Amino acid sequence: MTWFDVQELLKRQKTILVPTGSIEQHGPHLPLNTDVVAPLEVSILVARKLRTVVAPPLRPGVSGHHMPFPGTITLRPQTFIELVKDYARSLASHGFDPIVFINGHGGNAASVSIATSEARTELSPTKVIGFNWWEFIPKDLGYIVSFESGFHANAQETSWMLALRPDRVKMERAKREMPVASETIKMSENFYIGTFRTFKDITESGILGDATKADAELGHKVVEAAAENIARAIEEVVKNPPY
Ligand SMILES: [Zn+2]
Image (cartoon, rainbow, N blue to C red; front, side, top):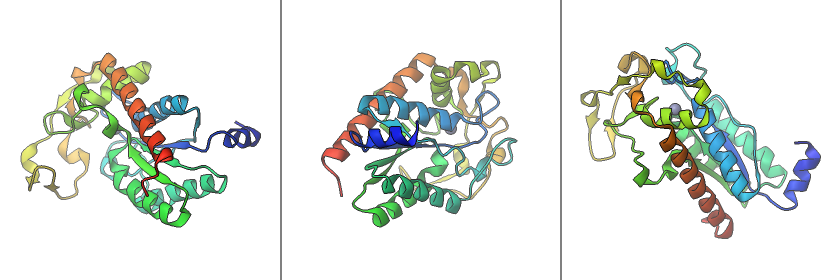
């Protein structure tokens, strides 16, 4: 787009989506930009439903725990938080509202939350929001993060990459490597205590889960359903600002 196109867009639509991802190892079978592709493609689907646009994604994220694997690029959380806030400041100054960060990487979640809450305070009444896209996948599609399903480069992540970038998935290298539950102290249903370790300490291949169980059709359904739910949530935020 040109600046002129953006000016025209702003006359009819102020919502903008910003995908946030990571450049990090995703096993020997998925590309380093897996966590950029998923939120970008979900954002494009959401943008079509809302008749708006997607800003250029923030490609690197907070991935220190993947650094032993070649190709990973990490930002310090402070750097990432400042990038998110500068995106929000820039977009708010042109009149975008709400500014919705669609996050695709678990390691960014805490930083997105801090950055968007700081940006809200600074830029109010502009609404600055951060979503983890996978939290909008309906439960009946079987997406769960657990020791049983694994956490990373697993069946779920491989499924949506088979749906979105089949030519970039090297299924012949997909394998099963499960996380070891006993290495974490379970304090309650949702709370775990752990010490910092890199993925190299807990997985040889970079996979935590069973990538061989991936299913492209399920991947398509998951992405479509999440995009639909995110679009509805954004419409609600515009109609009925929660703060
Ligand atoms: Zn990932």
